[in-house]
Image 1: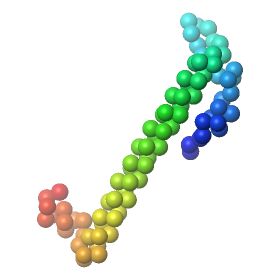
Image 2: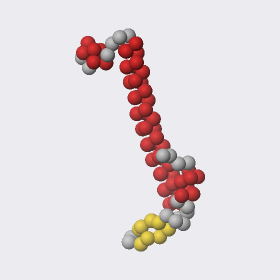
Image 3: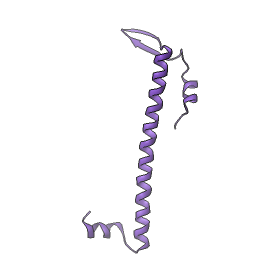
Amino acid sequence: MSMTRAEYEAQHPLGTVNVQHDGETRPMTEVEWTAWVDQAMEAQAADQAEADAVTAKEAARASGVAKLEALGLTVDEVSAVFGV
């Protein structure tokens, strides 16, 4: 499930996210926290783009199968003819 930036920031407000450095744990600075949120949003966008690509590929395949079936052919028959 994707979150908007505002939802993500509300769930992880500044001052509540810690960072470890040289064995010490401290709250992230505003700059660190902003970069951390930016990274989370970029990762979420990349995951969504990948999911969208898979969905588009599946839709294209389903459309192709439907066209073959409309012609009275099966994927196996076409694959056998073209050797794929």
